[in-house]
Length: 494
Length: 95
Image (cartoon, rainbow over all chains, first blue to last red; front, top):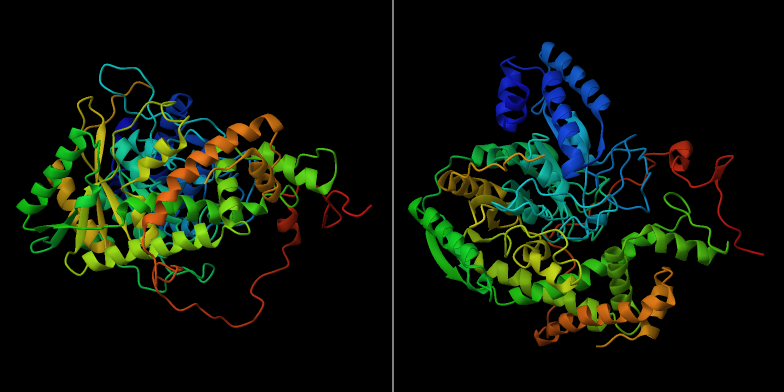
């Protein structure tokens, strides 16, 4: 197989080729290393390439396979979002404040991937501390979406915060990638790049070793080329971990076993509150099309109501900054990370290190978080938001009495131009209007590429399921994937 | 609620982030814009609703109270901006 044949494989295709000895893990890794070297100066998807480590891991994988000891992901070349601590390999969370941090330990999710034989190609770019929807808050500069509007040369955002993960998967710079989702950071970039992304139920994946943003919302998941690939990756990533007390002690099913199951009789809810003012015609049309596909597959469609939907984003912008301001208090220039001496007093070291180390959006959120938690405001803001959050979760509980899953668009638009929305924080926050509800309620959500807009840019549909019912999402996701027959790939310009 | 420059200054102090004087006013405006948008939460009737603390109900796990890890002094210090003789070195706190 030629190098581009190799990088063009799906994860499943590559695992089959490895099992059939048609390709070695080293050949697969080398093909990706070369592709990254050629593309990265243009796309900026990787903030750190680890070719030596990749080849070393690939050689070990080939040896395991020769001994008949191959694991479920053996030899699969993956990219890792730079939010995950990787032992001995710089992990920055896209921030200058921990810009040279070399973790002396491994995150549980990545450890699970290595346990199953996967190979690391490098660390993927992201919004600083996962705070952003366009990858423009990264200390390493934005990722450029491999997709372009037909006839235009304008660089587009790959979405965020997992923009590097999504762009790398879309441009065949890895077979799949880890990502994380606090308000939509897996699903929105997946939608913007024509890839599949799933945020599992809160607690499915251990948060140990993932740089904390908003602990009650953060959850890891994969971005992949197909629904099946996402199922394969999630199975390895998930699982109970005593090192994270919010990790759920439940069995991890073989998620691929849900693919190809009959969706007949499943009840699908279409939440009317998601039909927001100003929704682009193409997004609305694709949503209707998705309903038709599921109906044709034998699902029963119901219009449902989630009355508190419009309050999800404002509640999120209290809860997430509040938790972030507390989590990010650890970056004080004392034990690791950037230290700015200032005038030499302790307070000035704190204040100058944090002023210099954090970017503008991160500072903005720390200030909001500090404000809403400060004396006299806690009840009015934080407590109120936690109550509204309960209302949102109750909305979902009520509709899941009547339906088995919900279908919505993933994002209110296709990918937009870099620079377009940086000056208006609230406009940027609205990117997550369809995804953030899922984080607040702790539910699983998957984004499937389902069509393109007039300019040829990908659009995604989102399926939302009951807690721990990722299986139904994989069944329905497979149906949408097949019906949409989304085969478009970005035209190679890099 | 509108946030003024003095409030930004106070909050920045609490957050231990140095904010130059000429950034206080623009930040006050940005934060006021965000907080004004957040105010719509007051429309929601939350009487009798308990604040949500966990997504998926589960019992907080307990484990044996035993040492499971340790003896990693060098690893702990490996990313320190400054360390000497097995200790973090920090700016002088007491004159």
